[in-house]
Length: 361
Length: 255
Image (tube, rainbow over all chains, first blue to last red; front, side, top):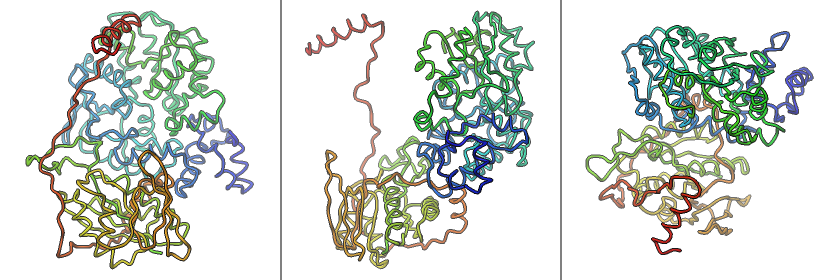
């Protein structure tokens, strides 16, 4: 990184904005919020400084990596960054094995489950989505999803991506759709959606009682315990996702659930909680893998899985769907295949409850 | 230097295509429109030329109301003005008809260069650019991947891609029509806020259908493609797979 956050601020103070615009560092930020978290005077480096620089470059149409533009374009057109059909967002429900009701306009449920783009479309993540659906059913939760009316929450603004206009359009759509249904609380599977609802939607006039699924399940530990059928005998380490950890201060709920699972022995990586290392997928970086890999020595997901392996854990437990493909790829490139497994917490809980088979996804 | 770019709305194949009850057209309600990909490249090439030659770019949106959104995006990207040519859904794939509808406006506009995609996702017959050049009696080159213009505006030199990836350099007098295969760079991205702004302030000239329209081909029947053969996955470990593979190769007389 040619410009660290500190150097960026120095360049701004020296009036050397153009040097900053030419810097690749603007696109290497992964929105881990580590700098914002540590800044002694609370400068919003990630979501204001870097987002502002990116917004300016987007406006000028120069220097923006093509991969990121493509993700923006797909999100703008289809409401998801994969360019999949908006109508097929709830196609995964057919394989769920339990009833997953879609809430149409005017309908109501106690809990509105915001499935998110990765959980809805990514084949690997769908397995964890189905696991969560089965847990909700087993807990007899009155829930529903938005189905084809759900769009990307637009965590873009909250992180450093700089596509403000796209966020506005997504926010307008989602806020309108949410307003047409009745529910008491929102459950989200993706920490980025949690962040967007918790931080931006609230600020813009759509206050929601929102919880990440790890918080939702942690508040129901006694009920879940009664339904536990099997042990998962393994040493497990937990990776704090930036959007629920550093960004929203939730460190305990995911750990409480993991400790609830019989057989699990939780061990910590040296960098945990507010010091956790990012998976490297935030702030649009999930779409900039090749750009970032060409410019970094050891990419973040590889560093992180190596840290996880050093604890001796067999399972790297995660609370965020982006991390599953990211860490699984990193495990392969780090030669850790067979030694370390990446598992979404929901899938582990569902396995312990006997709702999904085997330790494999 | 005046450049016109024709942007057609075509069915987006990300959505499943549904055949209408008549069996010869797509169910319009099920179709989501998208700007034809090669036309997006034509716009990009026009904007590149605009930057090089201080040209003006007129975006010509063809299709239903969605064409107006495409025009707003084109203006946000840098097009100078916008013409909307409404074409009923059932006629959109007929390039002969489209060429006859577009040619009066293309003639009266006095354009030095008319660009459009070499193909369209829904076209039934020959490319629009070639048909248009015939109606206007001006030169045509298709499969174009880059354009340079003589400073005095009399000549265009194009790179054309031939089958097999071979390249040729060709020269035509101007005005001319070029069918764009791809622009010199991928179509640019314009932030959503700019498109939204352009939509609010967009002023389009609407062109009605001329009195005489020539009709080309009509689809007699649409049939969904079906897979003739399915891939077979061989189960088992390496030895088992190898045994099955040898058996299959022997059965088919290959080994």
